[in-house]
Image 1 (spheres, helix red, strand yellow):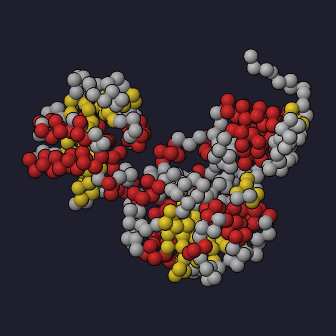
Image 2 (cartoon, one colour):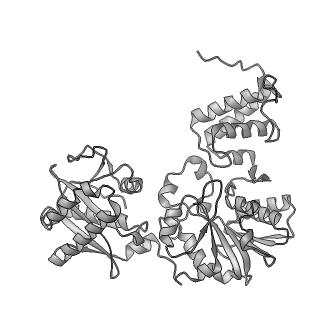
Image 3 (cartoon, one colour):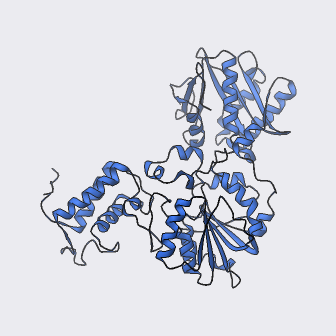
Length: 481
């Protein structure tokens, strides 16, 4: 039996933190705004509420002797703070109005995103020093938020002047508090604007932690992240879905604001796959951080100038330029067959045992009228993918199959547009519902289908790989677009 604590008794500091951690864990709060687990967050809240430094030992060197007892009245104040953390789901930094980055304290409130940029690490650890020199004097902190990166850059490089820019006037109000708090009024200037400044200044170093979260991830953010300004997170303001809208314009426009030897340091979080799909030709250096080598990159002005002059189209723009051609002639079926062979070679981990070979042998009947259909996908004159549907043993159920997009056009909304076309085709052919099967590891595909309204269903065919995921959607109502 678990021993009950006496609420009127004093607790040791460590016991108090452990109790707070248990409450946070039981409540299922999300972390990521300065801490990564319940114990660290509990220690932060308890120590802050008691007015103790965050590096206060929770136990004396002699573990048998408590170094601090927490009185019942203090426990009540801690409980009130914990309840606020749990009930509001606000990040702890908003409740304490304090955040720490690389050991530097900053003021923060709901007007600005909680500072946690990994760019602070590369600044403090000297990871940029190879690319910088005595000529480095002008620094731009774009999307500055509460000004933390601008302040840290001014601390690390005492000879530089920093321009801190943000679209949000409210965020800049918070940044001003931090600039003044750290005494950098003469070396950090604050400017409001959307994107790069057009003031004729050429910067030697541009730091940018922009909005980059893709649309699907935005929809799935925990409440703690939704408590932050969406403007600082949502990378889809221009109609895209891959989180790269702001970055597309930034990379095209940046060289005009950079000195000859300047560099751009960009944070993209967990969006490296989307970034590389959007900018496949960009020569970038990925920097090591405590979170790995996939979240912060460095690019030179020379590399930016080598990019195409026009920004990569957004997924929405790409989808508008697609042409879906029905597969009907012998030539069409031969083209479709070549794409399926390419699909088997590139994307099927178990291609040897796949049913794709039976499909190829059964062309054109397998995906021909009246019960089947196939589509070729073109972007302009470029063939970029294919998809098909066929009947099943279950009356009124069409199976969507062989959805394949060539690598250069992935993560641009093409698979979504193609799936919707196949669904419309199935509906026009009189099917009552559409279904698809895929591997559990294909999380991106499963997420896409679920966003279109597909839900788990019973298997509609016998398959040697029992672990397949089966999803279906009724066609009597419009499918989510």
